[in-house]
Image (tube, rainbow, N blue to C red):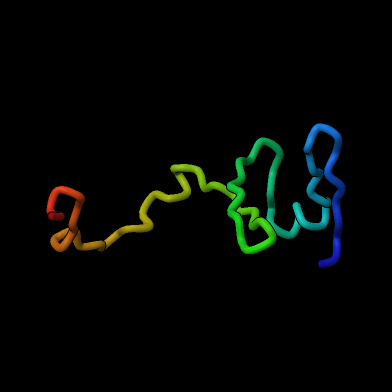
Length: 70
């Protein structure tokens, strides 16, 4: 994919249609910007309903939290 976009005077970028269609991104969807070296990685933020069931079968018996540190 070699689509490009231009940063507007309002610091906005339109994601090219081919890219949106390839990833099934929709208007109103939220994204996280993650710095990577001299660039930035654009990652869609999942909705809570999309995360349901991903930890099925996880065992929390060995779970540690901040209270068990020195």
